[in-house]
Image (cartoon, rainbow, N blue to C red; front, side, top):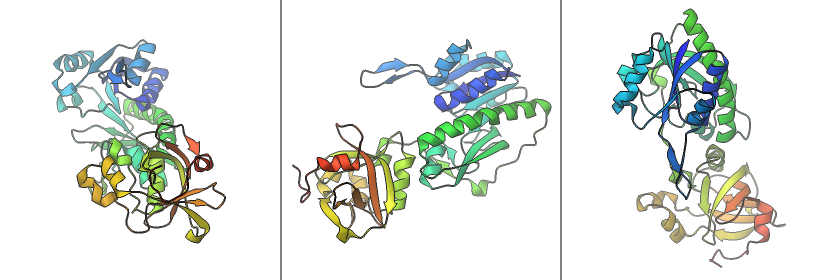
Length: 339
């Protein structure tokens, strides 16, 4: 089939490469504009643009497709059989959806109608789901509201992170999109309308979303640690006022009497990190947000709204990631005052 492909991040590269390897004719790739990265603000091409160029496929970059007449007319002139969209980052206008001869197809990283929107992979981990998957749909004007074409499922492993799930779903998306295109070409798919009453939505993740609320249950915080790897990470403040990221944690049941106190998060430090409208909810209640070590100073724990969070790997501001035992060797046990 003749395909126009639209996508932006690494996740979308999997679909692009699979379509190319399957022998479909990719007429053109459309991606978001290149953006400045890092402290030096160096302009970098999107992963999809890099992949398309390496495959010798023409690429157009667009800031806002619905206002880009040149891009829309270029797509129209190519008369594609299908437009395939994977993590493009923009909602397509109706005039673009109407262009392909067979269908506009979207590859989405959830079992729709669950987790429509921008961050379905992270949400599956945050919610403690046992399974996730790839849905291909015939695109409609709404946000991920189109009729379902193909759904492929996979199970989440214990300790699954958003990063590991991205990789697994990216791999799964390869077979899902090829199966979809083959069945569409044969006319062998009967689209299934989504059940609106079962729909849920996810938004764009922001850096502040990673800040930990120790009033929540330990199991919820542990999912946050895994759900926000590799970005923005679960982040909090030590009793000495320094911020730190948690890279690995577990939920444990252990009596507090067996632990050594390291102090607790200070309210004034939280006020420095959070906007005023967020501060009240994040200030730890009595008995929460307190740091402890095991008597041998090899294990680190924090009290929560229910249970203890065992912090296994962390990264203090200005330092590299380290295991808890290494962190505790250099941490002064005391009353929690800055030192």
